[in-house]
Each structure stands twice: as C-alpha cells, then as structure tokens.
Length: 278
Image 1 (cartoon, helix red, strand yellow):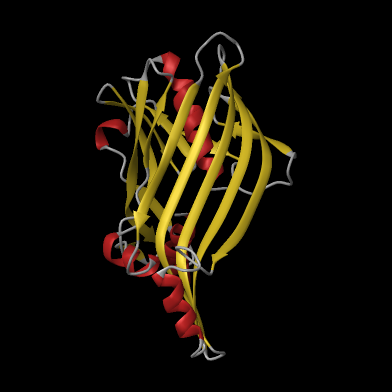
Image 2: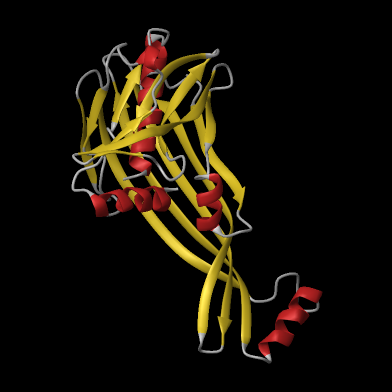
C-alpha cells in the first residue's frame, strides 16, 4: 500500500511543486474538537533508538524503533518435484524459459508508550507484508515479474501501564487481495488494496474503516485522483464514528460521541498507523 501511495503522490509532484491532499472526513465531524497535529512520526531509526513524538495537546508519546527485514523467497518447484507444474517448468527450462514463484516478505517491528493525564499504554506493533509473484526469465533477453497476490497484516497490542489487571486491547488491520492481472494493472482498474480492521479487548470493539482522498490541490489547481487512494481511517463504535486519523495531515480527531475512556485507545491506534507509514 505504501509503495502505491508514494507512486501516486510522486506523479502529482512531477507536475507541481506543492500538493495538498484532502481526506474525505465526514462533514459533520470536521468542526468537532478540531484536529490534533502529531509531529515527528516520519523517518526510521536504528533498531533500539527512540524519539519523543509531539502532539498539539492532550497526549505525549515516546517511540522506539525495531527491526525491519525484507527477503525474497524463490520456489522453483511449486507442488513438489514430481508435480505437473514442476514438469512443465522443467520442460520450458530446456528452451531457456525460467519460471519461479517468488514471495517477497517484509516485516517491521516497533513500539511506543502513549499517555494522557490519567492513562498510559504500551503499544507493541508488528507489520507483515507479503507480495506473491511469478518471476519470468527468457535466457538473457528478458526478465520480469508479475504480482499475483498482496497480503498485509498489521497488529498492535495495547497494554495499560496504569492498571496491569486491565484487559489488553488488540488491533488488527489488513487485507488479502488476488491480483491476477498484476499489481499495477489491478490497482489502476480496481484501486488500491483496501484494509479494514478492528480494535477489541473482547468486551468492547472498535471498527476501523478507510477514508479516501477526495481531492488533491496545488498552485495550479485541483487534480482528480487516478484511482481511490486511502488517506486515513475512521474509528467506529456502536455504529458511531468516535475518531479518525489523517495520514497526510499527520493528525487525529475525535467526535462528540467518543467517550473519554476511549480517546487514548483511538490516539494510540492512530499513532501506530502514522508510524507504520514512517
């Protein structure tokens, strides 16, 4: 998701010097409580290094980076050595045509502590991305890959620092999408992969739904998006929006329906999402 978002933004940046993304936050929420700007969420650190995050008001947090590991796993014999698929690929190899299944795996781990005037949570975060593709090589003439599947799993465990007997909150956000036409072609025809999720402590549950960019503007005017691009997320509890995060404005907001006890949960989830895209 991050790669495609950067691709879209880069296309705008090529044609204009300054682009502003406008996320489609429901109008009824825009003037309630106002947005809280979050600073210092961009940029990776060395594993174990930390920095303080800056909130305009209400919250403070300290982020500690972890390991980010990427690898490509080649499967030259899908289905086993004696399978029909393996035989077909071995036959083509005689003509200089190599076909391999490839799984590109990226894992990212980090944690942070976030608190307000009465509560504090330790957030342990883990992002897993799998890109499954077929890699083609025709002698030394041509070599390319075709993406066939995208899998993203983002999990966050929130444990209270104040009340150690309290149930932890678990956040899950992700998607699993087949892309038989290739990732780029599928994205252009269907839009970005859309991830949704929940936050739950097994008693209360908060749904996470994506918010899309409604327009992009610059000194040269407004631009229509080539395809729907996720610009943030809204948090819904008992069918009411209680908060949201804007990834481009790096800010969070709350509605009048959000209870004080849930605002730190929303702030923690929003911070995790902002750091995931650091």
